[in-house]
Length: 291
Image 1 (cartoon, rainbow, N blue to C red):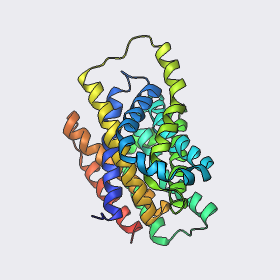
Image 2 (cartoon, rainbow, N blue to C red; image 1 turned 90 degrees about the vertical axis):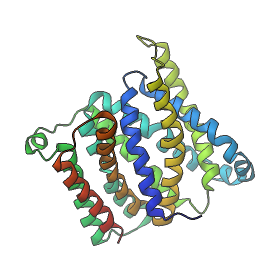
Image 3 (cartoon, one colour; image 1 turned 180 degrees about the horizontal axis):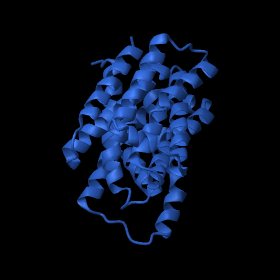
């Protein structure tokens, strides 16, 4: 059964919205590199029996494009979420999520520079509308919150993370006809986990207090490793291949919408009218961009 690429991209952002809520809930209990390392180790163990045969068959293609696979592992697996986890230690969730909404802009620029893909009028207007919607959601419609918005080191770290994700998405599209999806993803997970291992070992060796292995902590790692890693990444990669990185990037602006919904349901935060209005603007921008 073939799913529409737009549905796959929405599902990916839905799961990443859960990633933001549940991942942030344990960042104070597990250090960031260790959280990312455990997440991808679990993803590798689950995905290995699924993709082992295809990886063995496609190994010659993987070797032929080894530098690209390493970059995919570095940007999409090892760097992006780890940098986000680090960034939110120094900045607010509002700032971090707002920085994440810059992804479509980075993708448009990279697509234009390296792939010579022109940006349409609908994409420009749709991106602008979605960015306005994100700002409304994150500031709860308050001019004061917008005026008091300031940059710090955490914001800059998240911007670097967003840039890494933009590179990853662009390469997924550019090499879709040369690198098999399942095999490349499995190898990328393994390489990314290896890259994260020494940083995680350093964190664990210098912990001030031991990790709290509660049901919440274990549940969050299971969600991150299975749904936010394997399912979301496969949906995202497939959607990017189908419609292109620059058009897919706007779907990431749905993440603050899903974060708001999950926070209301699971954390009990009150849903404000400004958040509803901002969510409608984000969805409208996504639809306009993909016309």
